Length: 355
Image 1 (cartoon, rainbow, N blue to C red):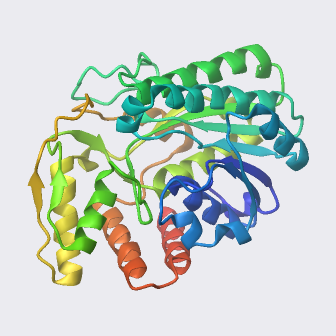
Image 2 (image 1 turned 180 degrees about the vertical axis):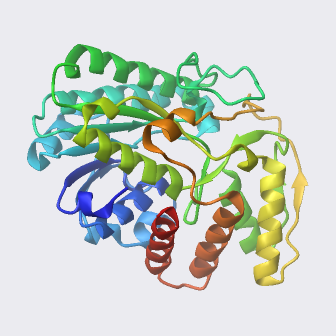
């Protein structure tokens, strides 16, 4: 992303009160964008959104993307140029408990956002953020490409596959002959400071470190494409910018780490313990404790050749650097420091390293 492009741009971001949304708002605000967020109240307590005081730094609208009438009113008032759709029910296990809500949010929420785009003449660029789990998982040893079959297994993954299909239909039916560029981006597993969600491994590690207990890992042998949160966020903003300038850049893209950073969950937690113990002189460890939960994929990688070829992109931070940034943020939080300062420092370091 180029910060100068976003200065003064009207950007509407759904899901701004969540983990990824808060980081993206911070990036956009620092770049000088005119940011409007539309989301439910923060999904966790504590939340990175509240800790960073974002409500006072942007136009924040609390609303449900299932509420089309309210969403249309916000689009009409804001007249955004760029729309980034992050709002979702993002947890696999939660989707087993609440499948109807998951589909309502992830499928009809996408329909509502795209319908608002269709009715708003100011919009030039749209990025719909989905997930690496949209693909029909065959437990392959190689990464999935953008032309692979879309058919997620569980309600969360499947609802995101549906979101991809909805987007394709809207592009073909309504946007093909208009000056609106729309892309979908499928990101790997995102980690970073400020994630307080349940059923995610890094938040589980942080909570265990704070409580001085062993980290419980339910599936240490599952392989995932772990990446720092700034990696995909910078890609979303890069694609939004490039397709704003040239509609031919729009498409579907994977974004994930290089092969060497696709780790098992056990390897990731071992790395966390190593880095944490080096910083704190603790003796944090983890235990393997399968809890008999619902089906989750064991092996998942992404092939990011298309993103690399189209935009000359490559990952900026490897998994070691990502873990160091997570621990730095977490220790600042435990020390009651201003985490916004830490985030600004990490964003600037990331952009400098990218250049």
